Amino acid sequence: MKTFKQLSFNDRLRLEVLVKAKNKPRQIAKILHFHISTIYRELKRGQFEALNSDLTKEMRYSPDIAQQHKDEVLAAKGPGLKIGTQKAYADRIEEIIIKDGYSPAAALAKMKEEGFNFTICVSTLYSYIEKGVFLNLALEHLPEKRKGKKKHKRKTVQKRATKGESIENRPKEVMSRAEFGHWEMDTVVGARGLARKSLLVLTERKTRKETILLLKEHTSAAVVKALDRLERKMGKRFREIFKSITVDNGSEFSDWEGMERSRRSRKKRTKVYYCHPYSSWERGTNENQNKLIRRHIPKGAVFDDKTQGDIDRIADWINNYPRRLFEYRTSEGLYNEELKKALI
Figure 1: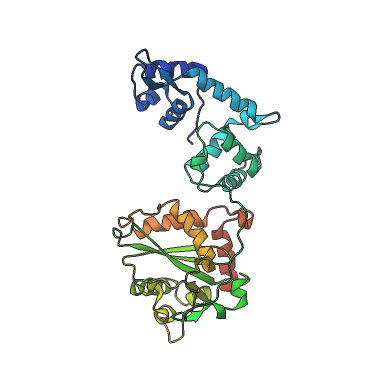
Figure 2: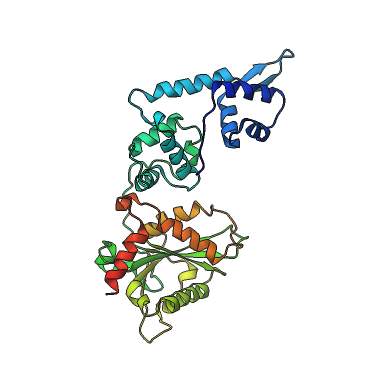
């Protein structure tokens, strides 16, 4: 397991000497046996603007300024803060958030699952990160900042007819998430004008189970073919698991008949509902799940070199991510429970 260690004042004195000797951060990290990100962070923490004899200015490193910053952080912790004596706990928190990409809340749930007896609450962890209590962990490592007040959803009046069945006719049990087997579907695209491939993302509304399929082309035909492959893989279970799919009005979802038509029998394999135009919030589950995908594939990235295996690993990460919505249970666990009940 990777661990993090903190610089002592003696380390800071050595760092000052190495900086004056014109050593690069990577060389310094190797000499002092610290991660390079730790050195960069320390240099930033102790930098100050110095006036040279020729009246020019330059940025320098001061071990005293860096140490003062550390002392102030320790003082800001206040009485009763115990994480300072829990090095293994603090190291593991940093690793889960920085390396594995977990949110603070999910990281704490993971820590509990791993058997740590010591714990802190989510707001306290956020406070420690904001104050700079951790050596390596900073706000920039968080996948999302803390959310503010929840916005009220707008009620949309349809301005034009959709290609297929409108979301207005979708059963109430789908809206309430009371019944398993109703999905939302969206696409994630790469850099506009550069990427050819895209991702077809299906999210089960009740459990938030994610299925991601790699599309070679961003077309309606490619979407139908992807659903055909999924149906062949799942067989007769497909109709019971995919009772309905809600999509937006993108051109890639224009063939509602092809999406509904089964390749195995004359019966329809699913029912497709269309959101109102320009109302992506009606697929809110998809929108939130796509943020998790973007932790692995940033917006504007070209992922034409990705394979379905690469995409499956991202889906596995999402499906096994502890969710606060489910008291930190995973979508994979909930989905498997619902699957057993649905296929009895």
